[in-house]
Image 1 (cartoon, helix red, strand yellow):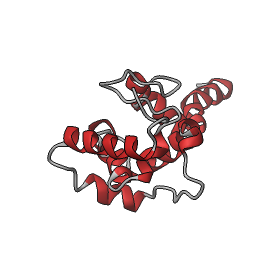
Image 2 (image 1 turned 45 degrees about the vertical axis):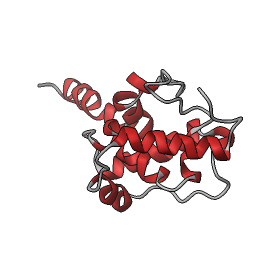
Image 3 (image 1 turned 180 degrees about the vertical axis):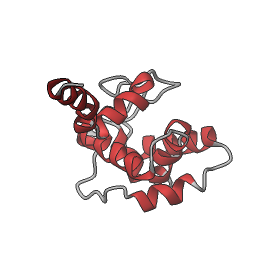
Image 4 (image 1 turned 30 degrees about the vertical axis):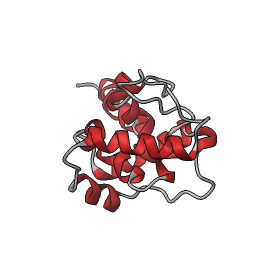
Length: 141
């Protein structure tokens, strides 16, 4: 193979890695359900836009964001999932994002993935009730 052809092949193979990161991971693993703008398809698929941060205001909400089946069962590494969740909060939480936010870490994601609740739908219903009680105008479908 000639040197120019080898360089071209190398660029093609390495270029995707240069663009990899939380945004691409969201696109490949989350956007199919939650949409490019985080609007989801309520009530089955929750809207994240301007609401995602409210989950961090209630007990169990932070864990829930890791433990929902699409996140917990994704092929993403713990570090990559932490990166996606942090990116999503930056992109979608809007005014719902807490003023002080501890970023998700790979260790936290690993721990939470290993301890999923038995009934994630019931957890979501309870969290949504708690969120509505705290933010009645900011969280309704």
